[in-house]
Image (cartoon, rainbow, N blue to C red; front, side, top):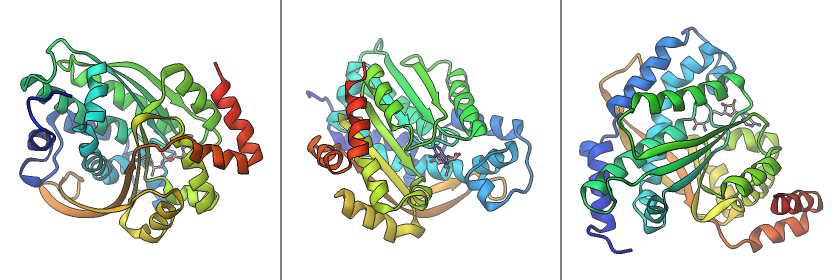
Length: 317
Ligand SMILES: C[S@@+](CC[C@H](N)C(=O)[O-])C[C@H]1O[C@@H](n2cnc3c(N)ncnc32)[C@H](O)[C@@H]1O
């Protein structure tokens, strides 16, 4: 790709907007979006379980208040190198991007990725990398079994585009909600990938603990291989976990054979209890490009039942 500015310069320009002076901050639009939903939802005490896996309006209120910005900044921090890479810029130039947000909660990942894309497009336009007339069409596949989470995810994404009315370059072409649980929905996700195109970014953010509890680490690894097969060649699988499960994520990384990195970043704190302060957080990430398909083929060959599911995924029209 012929670039007027190099990758490092582009990254610095994007960071100047979303992470000025090294502190991650929300744009006015995202702050407005978050506050609008916090105001709309009733507040109240909920159990720790309800705060992490919301099934009620109070639960989603607590989730938005406690976790939204943390997950949002971690996702941007982990994806920025991909966003300024040639792999990603090609997708922007082609004008199409497909996001799969597994166990999405209130769509933190989809919103964080879209807002960072918005900043990137503005800078690409200003620096002559992209025409002012360029449009990028986004397809979002949101997955969650909790109706309040899936409903809030769709509503927040729609409101985001309504608030950012002057954001003409990004078109939300399709927003699909999938309420069948992951990983049981893998076959359905395969059909969607066939119909809408392979996923360019697959998010598994803050979902590893319940997945490991439901099966075990090698079962989770098998499902990640299957998912990876649905990722576009120059796309990325994105796994994020909190700092408390280093052992689990490192073991998973060894089985899936992908690097796991410890990350540290500083953000402004937006919680109702603690505004205008900054805080430094640690977390672990694995952001990687899908490997050649024989990884999955080997797996399917050794797992007869899943091999059948895979055959159906690949042959679905
Ligand atoms: C920690 S939360 C949200 C994580 C979100 N990805 C984020 O980064 O903020 C986990 C979500 O998984 C959802 N969930 C639980 N089991 C699920 C399943 N089998 N399939 C899909 N979603 C599930 C919960 O309803 C909850 O919204």
